[in-house]
Length: 305
Ligand code: 0X9
Ligand code: ZN
Ligand code: ZN
Image: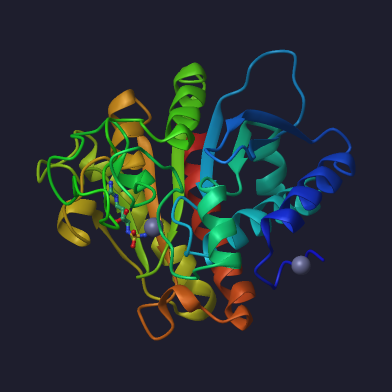
């Protein structure tokens, strides 16, 4: 059964998406953006007060990397909080009145399912190609942003394999198509990973600073302070290349170069004690503090529409 303080299986998440949509009084709708390599439906949840005109939006995905289980847990938490605090929390109400939030709870569903059933430490997709017996590519090396130029591998057996071509992974293609299709409305792109407690922004495929570096840094610092205010959890902010490592083909750089200015990668708890195996007892505090950072960014974006 589904629980916000447990790591849910894909089967539990599918049922949860349906029941949450049904009970949302029209505040949330579901949209399939395509299927994964193994045929699972990639479902984007659109949360926001219905409107006859198209509203500006924020896109957030979780679970690009299969083993980072705290990430899908956060997307589920966010949906719960959005639906349950709309109408009582003034910021959430104003946000969802004015904007839509698109949430993709699990990006790499095939990989996520594999981590539950076979190999807890799997990272990549589960696609196969003749010519190699190794499976999958790193979805966060497969976007068309300096593709495979640095910090990525062209070896199909590597955990950071960039894929055979940009968007060779159907999951990446489906998300990129969705964002391209909604390019004029999407004002922010948030992607949730773990672990290391970082708030990263472009670029990672080059050491060049983004044109909006100062503003992106200011917003990241504000979001990190908001996060820290709850339990004292410390985050480091900065461009990917110098804050974590140079790595091309990432979704954040790709969205930014497409024109989505507020493009951020979160690396949630912890800093390595448990790493990807973050205990379920930390789901609630991690999600509560991360909500503050996401809401900080959302409020900034909303104020600067
Ligand atoms: O390497 C990654 O893809 C991310 N770290 S993780 O440990 N979750 O794998 C960092 C991504 C930073 N952004 C880009 N490299 N574009
Ligand atoms: Zn269950
Ligand atoms: Zn990751």
